[in-house]
Length: 207
Image 1 (spheres, rainbow, N blue to C red):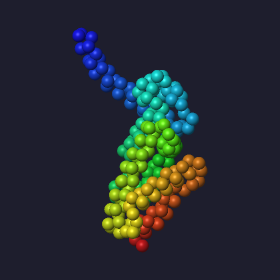
Image 2 (image 1 turned 180 degrees about the horizontal axis):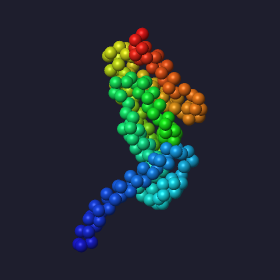
Image 3 (image 1 turned 90 degrees about the vertical axis):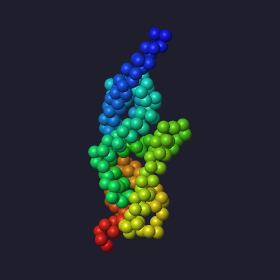
Image 4 (image 1 turned 90 degrees about the horizontal axis):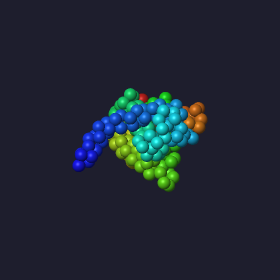
């Protein structure tokens, strides 16, 4: 009886320490990926870079894929807190500002692109769930912005909001991948042109 009574107490005492240690590892991993991205990076290499054992990473995150998802998700949260995108901007402008912000951390841009590519392969549930949920949330947010701006005349009324949202995401992600391969690709300029084609840019310029 005594042994069983003590076990929950030990678990409760160790839980906060485990959470704190997990966060420390995640913080270190974010710094590593911000500099290196995900290309050719193994779980063992990450463990060495952040100063923990391979077994510790497996214990806290389960797999490289899950660690990558958490690294990107937490990094994105921090970027949003540091440089939030105003609610009143249009859908293309929101993606343009996001792309401009993300360019300051190229390692994370590369990590995101790698996760999306991994999600398209079989046997990668964490990456697939991450990409599917992220795209769905982004489409819903952007479609709502399109509807709001259509109501004010800022976006052409004949456009389907859900299709516009999907198109904007495709354009932004595609341009981001091109920029990773060729830094001369003008993401911002191309998105600004799409903005004008939707009617949003012309409205802002007062034309």
